[in-house]
Image 1: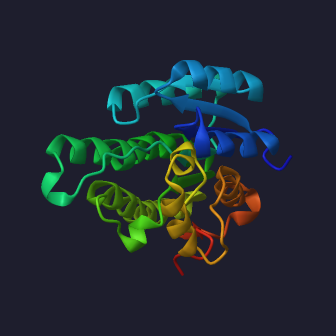
Image 2: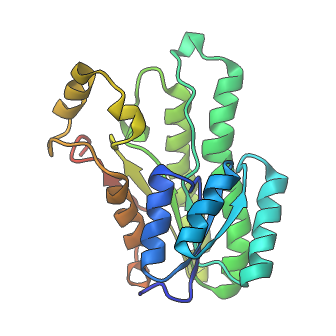
Image 3: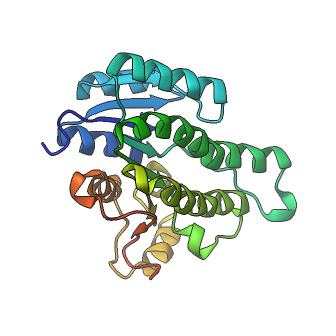
Length: 241
């Protein structure tokens, strides 16, 4: 129970990787705060973990300010922020609509920026904090049809390094985790030929799980990881080295 007494907020936590992260943090004793645009599912999962839930669209500055204010009022502190909320709107560059570019950048990158802004206000007073953002292997490799998504996930890396430099002296570490192909409902629905082609690019020969990503996040959230900041841990089975 290495996180007992700590408070952790995870965005996009109602399902998938975000939920796995919330479970991993709760398993080490943290009080978890699950935020998601699906407030009903976030609340259901939070009850099962003994935590709290808030409806949150991370791209809306007023909602972000209100959630962090409510969290501080209710729990008094924030030790861990995990920026996991994200979405895709895929299309080839010449066919990509500007509104889809804006939406992906607003949620995946601006949302993390807004949450970091509020988190560091609390963490600076504590002189302690862990901020972890979920990037992607495609931030390093690129991916056809995902210019907006790749740009947002690459932008998270620059944001991570800059904030790490700004707040290291306040005891706040800022890192990222970059998942590769993770087993999800989307990958399960792919044609078998496509799945096999994807698997051939992974030296370990399997898709990752949400728990694989959650364990990397947990490692960075622990007090023992206090000398790691401005870094990105790759969780991709070796497909990018």
